Length: 299
Picture 1: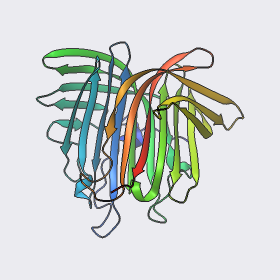
Picture 2: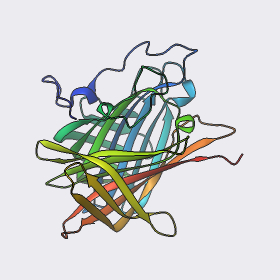
Picture 3: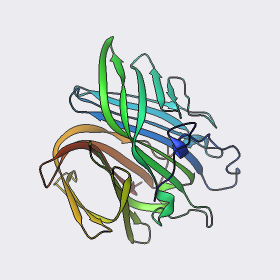
Picture 4: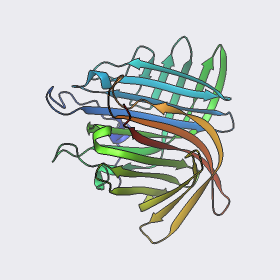
C-alpha cells in the first residue's frame, strides 16, 4: 500500500523525472500531472500549484498557481511545453521547492514529506484507459513553508499540504461521470480518499488513513452535502472494521481546476477545490480540502 522514498530525494516516486516518449501521436491522451495543495488557516492562506504536460496533447499542457490570501484570490494559468514542469512564471520543482514569479504574484515554497507515501496504483480504483497500461498515482502529506507576495505585501506561511503525482493515459470525460476526492492532514494522521462514478454507472471508492508509519485502507466513503452541494461531512469505512467521520466547520474558499483542453465543444469535465477546517467526532480539528468533479454535457 506504500512506496519507498528515494535515498537521493525524500519525495521518492513523486520526484521522478518526466518520462520521454511515453505516448505516440496516435495514442490516447497521455498526461503527467504534479500537484501541491496547501493551507494555513492562521495566516488565512490557501493555495495550489498544478502542472500538466503531455507528449501527444498540446492543449492539455498547462501550469497553474491559485492562491487565496485573507479572502483575496489571485490566479495565473500559463501554457506549458512538452516534457517540463516549468512555465514562464511557475517552476514546479520535483525536489520539493517551488517558485512563482509573475507581475500579479510572487511566491517561494519549500516542502518536507510527512508520514509515508501512498501508491494508488496498488488498488483497482482508477480504470486503465488503455488495457495493460495502468494509471500511476502517488500521494504524500507535506509540511509547507514559504512566502507569498501580492502588491508588494509579503505573507509568510507555515502550512500543511499534500503533493501528488499521476501519469498515464487519461481522458476524464471519457472515464468518469463524476468524482469526489478528499484530503486531511493533522499532527497525528493523514487521510486521502477518492470515489468515482464511472461512465457505466458503477461507483468505486478507496483511500488510506495514515497514522505514524502505518496505512489502513479505506474501503468506502460516504458524503453528505448541503443545498449548494458543498461538503457537510464525510464518513470513512476502514478495512479494520472501524468508521471515521469528519465534519466541515469552516469553508475558506477554493478554485476551479482546469482539467481538459482550453476549449471544447461537447462533454467537458469541471472540478472545484474547496479548502476546509474539519472536526472529527472526538472534537479534534484539522485542515484539508475536497475536490468535486462532474462531466458537463449540455452543449
